[in-house]
Length: 105
Length: 228
Image 1: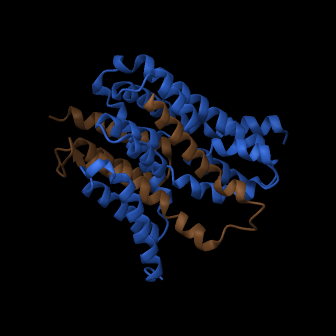
Image 2: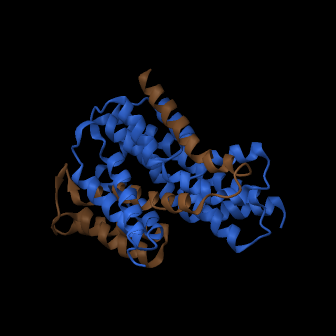
Image 3: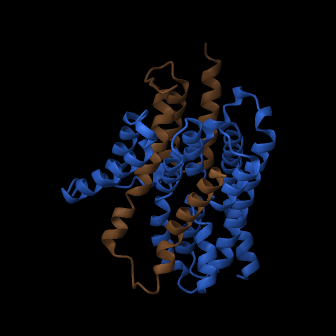
C-alpha cells in the first residue's frame, strides 16, 4: 500500500514539473532569462550525479583503478558521447567495451 | 506535410533511441521486482512517472531501506530537469489547445524534448502536435513495454550481460550535450563529485544534495564571471 503512495507522489510531483512552464506559458509572456539560465544547470548537475557514482564506485567503495571495467568502459563511452553526441553509438560502444574488458583476465 | 506524415516522421526520428530505451525499461522492471515492488506497481510507475532515471534512483533507495519520503523526494528531484525542458518547449506549444498541452506535458523527457526541439528549429512547417505525439508514442510504448518484459523475464537474463550498465551510458549520452559552457561544466563536475562523496549519506539523500550543490555552484560560477 505505502509503495502505491510512493508511485502516486512521484507521478504527481513529476507531472507538476513537466507541466510547469507549459501551463504558465500564455499567462506569462516569456520565461525570464535568469530563470531559464538557472534551469539549464539542472540537467548537467543531476545527470552527472547519476553517472559518476556508477563508474567510480564498486560495492559502495571508491574504485578508481585500471581494474574497474565500468570506469574504463565509461571513459571510452564518454569520449564517444562528447565526439558524436549520438545516444545509440554511446550505448553500443560502452557496452561493447565492457564486454571486451571482461574478457581480459 | 500532412499530420499523418509528421506523426510518422516523429516515430521514425525516435528509432535511434529505442535500442537504449527498451533495455532501460527492462532494467527498471527487473530491478523493481527484486527491490520489492509488485509487477503491477512498477508498470504503473513506468506509465505515470515515465522517467527511468528517477525510477531507478527510487528503486535503489527502496532496496537499501531508505524512508519512503526520501524515495519519493529523490524521484522528484532527479526529474527536476524536466522543468527546464518544460520552459524550453513551451513556446513551441503555444498554438496547441490547453488540453493538448496538458497531454503533451506527460510525455516530456530527455529524448522527446531533444528530438522535438531539434525538428521544430529545423522546420517551421512541421505539425507540432502530430510530430511530438509520434515521438512520444514510440518512446512510451517501448519503455513501458520494456518494463513489462523486465518484470516477466528479468530473472532469466544472465548477470553476465550487465544490462544495467546501459543506464549510466544513456545518461552519459544525455550529459554530453547539456555541458555547453563553463557554468554547466561546473554544475556537472560539482554534481558528480558531491554524489560520489555523499554515497552512504544518512537517509540516502545523496542525489538530492548533489543536484542542488551542482546548480548552486554553477550559479556562483556564473555570477563570478567564470569564462567571461
